[in-house]
Image 1 (cartoon, rainbow, N blue to C red):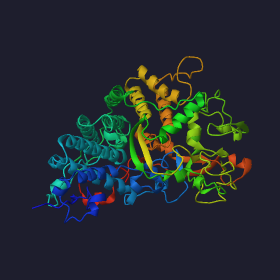
Image 2 (image 1 turned 60 degrees about the horizontal axis):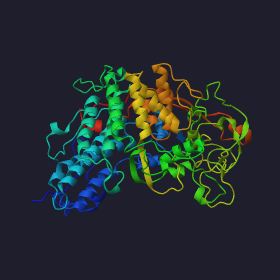
Image 3 (image 1 turned 90 degrees about the horizontal axis):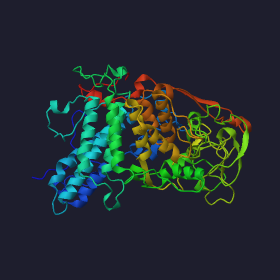
Image 4 (image 1 turned 90 degrees about the vertical axis):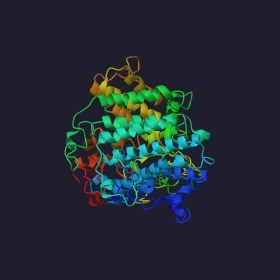
Length: 602
C-alpha cells in the first residue's frame, strides 16, 4: 500500500509544522505519495528547492521574521528602525519574551527545514533511476546534508546548544524517542562540521549549469570555518557565565574550560578554504579605476550589488528586496522612483567608527578629523563640490558606501530634472515635517547595498572578505606572531583604499600587542562588514554586546533646521542584559518537553 507524504511531527514539538510547506502543501495528500515524489525528477527538484527556499532573506528585516529575516542590523549598535513594529526595538529594550512569535519563528522554521532535509536524505537513493541518475542522487543528497548542517548552524548561533534530531520520527514513536534533551554545544558543532565534511565529497566546485545559489564545495568549507570560529569564541569557549546551563541529568551544555586549540581549528579551516579556493574560485572584488579613491569606493559598493561576483561565497538568490525602500530617503517633491522611507537609520557610533582617508580613527589627534564647521567637499558619489559638515569630509571610501548623511547627492537621480539632494533637517524633503514614520530616527540613513531599483536580486550572506578577517582573528588568538594576520587584514584595508599597517612611508603603525591587534581586527570587521548582519553575532560571540549594545544611542538633531540639526543628540537609551546573549528557547517547547531546559535568565 502506498504511504501518503506527510511531515512527521515529533510529539515534543521539536518539529512543529504539520505539513511540508510550499509545493507539497498545494497537492492533495490523497494524490501525491512518497513513491510519486521520488519517481519524478521534477518533484524531486521541487522538494529540494523547498528546503533551499527557507534560507533567510535578510533584505526583509523591516518585517522581522518575514521570510525568516532577522533583527540583526537594528538590534546591533549599527542601526535603528524608526518603525515601532520592528522587533529589533524589543531587543534593544530587552522587553522580549519566551512566548513571542518571533522567538519561536526561527526555531520552528529551521527545525522544519532540518526535518525535510533528513527526509530527503533518507529517500533520495530510492528515486526512480530513469529520472534521477546516481550522480544526481549523490549531489542532491550532499546538498540536502549541507543545508541541514547550515540550518543547525543558524540555530546554535541564535539559541546556543539545541537537540540534534536527525531521524524522521513516525507519529506512533514511543515517548522516549521524541522527548529529547539539548545536546552540548560541542556536540552540535562536531555534528555540523562532520556533516559538512561528508557533503563536500559529492559537491561541485562551481555551480552546475550556472545555477548560482546551489551548494558548492566552497560554501561548505566556508560554513565549516564559520562554525569553528563560533565554537572558539568567548561566548561558548569556557564561558563561566553559562555554567548554570545544564541538562536535567546535570550534563553541562557549555564547556567550562577554555580551549585555545579551538582557535587553531578555526584558523586551520579558514586556511584550508583559502588554499583550495583562492584565487582560483574566489578573490576580492575590484572595480578598476585610474582614481584610487574611486576604485576603492566602487569596489566596496558594488561588491554588494554585482550579483555572483568573484567575492560571493554564499547568497540567497532572487530575494525580495524590502530594504531598498528602508534605505531610500523620503525625498518629498521628487518623482516616485527616488522616494522611499529612509527609516533604517545608522547610529552616530557607526558613523564615527569609519576611519579617515589616511587610515586613522577619528580619535587620533593626527587623523585630520574636524568636529565642527563646514567645507566644500565632493563625495565620490557626487557630481560637484558641496557644503558638507566637516565630520563627514575626507573619510575613507567605505564611509561613503555605508552612510547617507545630510545634504547628500542621492545615488539614483531617477527622472528628475533637478538634483535630488537628501535633506533630513526638520523641514527638509526627508525630515520629520514630511513624516513622523517614514523618516530616519538618527539623521543618518544606511546606504550600503542600495541598488538602482528595488527588484528581487541575490542577497549575499557570506563573502571572501569575512573569511579573511575570520582567519586573521583566529590566528591572533592562538599564534599572535603569525605573519598571515597582517597580510590578510592589509588585503582588506588595501582594497578599501586606506593605508595598510606597516613601517613604510604613509603606512599606519602595526598594532604592537596581541590585544591591540585584536582591537584592530574587530574594528576592521565592524567597518568592512557593516550592515551585513555580522556585527550582532560578532559582539555576542565576543561577549562584548552588553557594553557595545547597551547604553546611549546618538544621532543628529532631527527636530531642528540649519546648524542646530548638526548637534549630536541622544536618540534612545538601550538595555542589554546578560540573558540577551542567547535567545530563549520558545516557551511552548519547554512546556511540551520535560527534558528541554531553558537558557539562563529566561
